[in-house]
Length: 466
Image (cartoon, rainbow, N blue to C red; front, side, top):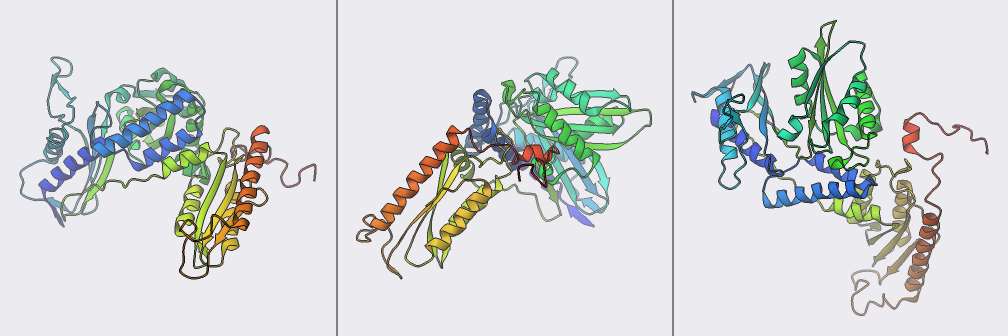
């Protein structure tokens, strides 16, 4: 038996709502940035950039991501072995007190948008209560909470249909999405609920929106179930509509498609669809009886901005010094971060680093320059970079502690061997980059990941011209 204080739930809800008002989920930012790197439309690319810039400004200034700070939806699962302290509040009262505190916090007052008497006077409750609460009693001794602040623009685009069991769900979704217009502020996520009854399908669609973004992982791994196949089909077909960021056209309308299903009547096929906008806000926490949950602010990561510059460049040169005969941990991390983005594809369906050239610069006061260059250049070609002749240069000072390349008296800038190799490397990189650029990139036939995933095998295993 676990005793949980009512104040712990109140505080946890309040803190989580303040937190999500100015912090996007990390997976959402990563997905938007990935969409930005592959976007071809200038207007859509600019819209995606504005989302990313706005997100950073809100996080740094702790101010709301959007002026519409949403209606609060809560899914709460209460363990059967949980008892509440003698606070005299219902669970709904605790949640609503948390909402009240969050939306009236003096350091970051959030816009109240909830109207009492919705069919009549429509009077603002002034503290954004009440929340929409879905409670479930489950085995266990913890309280698990999922909450979201859902904007009205995207919520108003929700759709529900009672399809025939023989109807095609993907066709229905692809027909419906263009009718939503741009008022739901794409790119976002489509939550889809299938089965149960009419109201169950819509609740499932809302709950699906709280799941993490993982469509790119699914694309790499491949479908393992019918729902996986349906997610991938809808994702590709909706993005092929060309609605794009903020409705300006482009490659990315949805960042993910999330689906939850439930058994239904033999004569029915209920389907609910709810889009989530670019102001995606949700949090998840569990209470164990040891105090309120605390949200952890994401650390600043400059890599997305660096990767943006890398993908805009035709030439990449990785520099490293030598430590114990190896490249530095920083250089290793750069290679690892490049590799983490290697699933992105260019417009031709090739890996994103195709059509670019790479080189390496090494300095140090010990042996190992060629070993380090070998490691870096192999890594770059494995990622898709083309390596020209003489693609590395190095300077080695006197063994042991001593001046670095740019230190006074090192002799580095005057070293003829280093200057010659650096010059040759530079021109070789420029020549090859120009050749590839003029040729329109690396020819695409036989190396398109998108085509391979679609079933094309490019005459594997024996090309006719062997």
